[in-house]
Length: 368
Image (cartoon, rainbow, N blue to C red; front, side):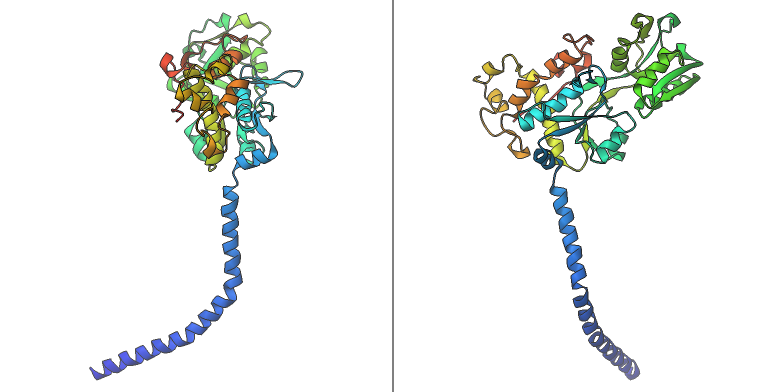
């Protein structure tokens, strides 16, 4: 028992001696490392600060929005011979500029093909991607993107020569089908053909113009893309009447702008502006009656137009940001009709793009 106690005492003494030696060394070591630790702390602080520097702050400082578009698709984004841009996607970029700067022309456009569009957003070349892009889960989770509200509900279709008399996808067995690479069209087509046990030869191109040129030249018997794109592109073929867009839909294609994820400040501005255009139509406010509605007795309308309250303050927007959007661009219905609908050469029915209370899917959260 005594021997055990002696061992315990000796062990305790050794522990005390070890601590006595270690403490000064630890203290000296801590002192010598203090500049390094300070540097690390500063690095963390700088990183934290950079994260708070939203893209929104950069855009406001620059005084201009940089918007990635196609520039090749009438109705969505198209640049004419004079360098003037038009289309649904273009108008939403202009709406954001109007809300921020009271100037819808404070936008620089970057023409991007399907393959390079995501890289341009990820690298910071553009502030927003507004390029008839389908919102998919994989794109949102793997590409570091955050999608804004859907601006056009679409579906993938197929166009064929009218003399083929194909009534559906089943009539395309053992044919060549053109598609643009880097789009959802490739995978959707493969899935649908596999599902029906049909054989086909994919003919793909990076450039949309090359894709349609190959189809028109007879290199493939059919072409697949978003149905709206097929309808638009059909009008540009040499003999539009010789081609028909089938009723078959291969997929659902919700088209929406996108920004980089992790920047809620900037994302909230984009979302709010798009919702404002939708809400304006629901409230019955348009570019023609804006002046009259500004003197309305309806409190919701007055707050929405910035005549009362401070709507927009928390996201660095002027209280009258919605007023600006409608003044320059109109509500969602006006934007749609001007670019794709009854007031455009395309005459596309709104369908699912009607308001929720008119049989469609367009819906905005309340502005309050």
